[in-house]
Image (tube, rainbow, N blue to C red; front, side):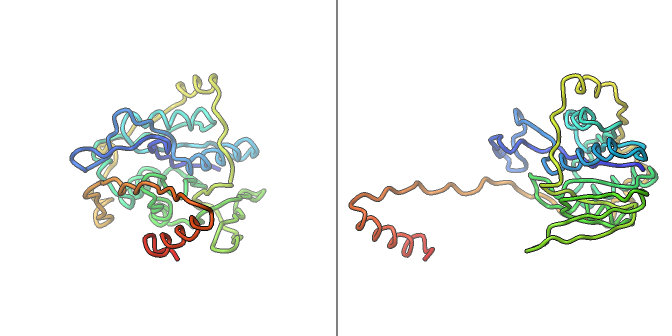
Length: 264
């Protein structure tokens, strides 16, 4: 069994985000970039399967992004992935989610991967299109928002538990297949310093647009989504302190909620 993990690099959720003066992107200088948290579940799940099963041949991590994205890829390798693929080209940054899925499909379709793992969505754009689109383009089944995964002993199928509104859904799927991972599936281990050093020696294949045959034809007719402008959310109005006796303050609070906030 060969496993592919699709990894994205995103701004750290604790980082203060500022919009560029031209409004076309965020200010990326000095912004801490990390592995997309939902992709962390995918990385760990792939590594756990390799540790528990003798039939897992390899776990490959693939990432799209500039040179800085190597940091996220090395993190996946340090956790336990065997090798990596880095899709690095300026033109890749202009692709939307569907076109990105087509790019990944073009690069990996002949890789013989039995199980493809990725996060359910990215925490920056929150689109969640990559996983389902990739499954469609590779013509394999897709199970989304998986919180528990059990691969059959013969390695031919798996049972997945996924979250749906108000309940959990349990499905059985034949491999090859793709799942998108949700919180609760597992927690990515912290890579140790020795493993971080070993990760630098693991093989990483870097591919540019010139290495992807027929890229224009692959992405043609897909996508069409473009970011026209970025703007920060409106500033919150300052809070109010209601003075006076408790009974009077309560009455004033009710009035404000009804007349100003219009929540009651």
